[in-house]
Image (tube, rainbow, N blue to C red):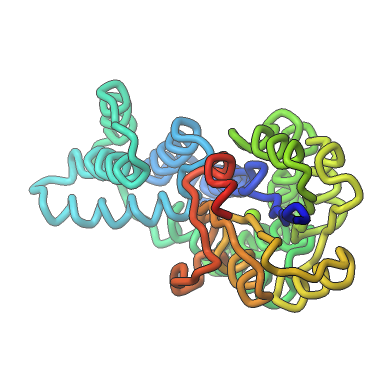
Length: 336
Ligand SMILES: [Mg+2]
């Protein structure tokens, strides 16, 4: 019997990616906050530090910056209703947010972290301006998602959304928009594309072992990744992916059932969908294109940002297999 053909997604399936965006967003929030409020918005500053701390400490599986801040703001509202004075509200919201993320991820929160978070939120009285870290980030994500829906996943999309957000907010407040700042905001957005970091970060834990294992079985490995050609090629080079995938590396602007069909029947010249499995982290960008094209799907969930979360959950499907981490493919190989 012929070996299997594995079609892998790249970003957040084989290599970490979504926090590159979170860090750029936090840099932008810090920069624009100082420009608008000259360091007086202590609450936003604490929220930015808190979000950065969560991502640094929890690592790849931590939610993206927007999800962390959304949750923190919800917890803050609940704490404000529960507590008599404003003092301690922010610390309490940081603790509840951290505990809730740990619980979702099945890790245990530690005492040292609790102490740190109480300190981080202990800023006493504070103002809540209309354009605070959370509302600025929410607007940036809206602009970015609209750009992805309209124009796809080119290199310009994210930095352009950061520049546009600066402009929208400055105009709304009545501050003067200048070219130097427009360029600076754009450059912060461009910070997500860093070839040195692609190499430093390497592949996600378990990815190399899984690819090696599949090669040892004599299977065919194919990579299909959506995004800007130059950027995705830089990621492929930095991680020396040709070693596993050979010539079967494809960069597309959009993943759809049609793209998958074209890849399978055209580029790969494969006939038997029973022997093919796509592995990816996204319901919207990976799962549906694969199942609709009639092949199996190995789902390794990693919700990345608002655009990708816009779905109705994973469907029940006999060709769908879900894994907590990519190396579970090794133990389950014979049943796939
Ligand atoms: Mg992905």
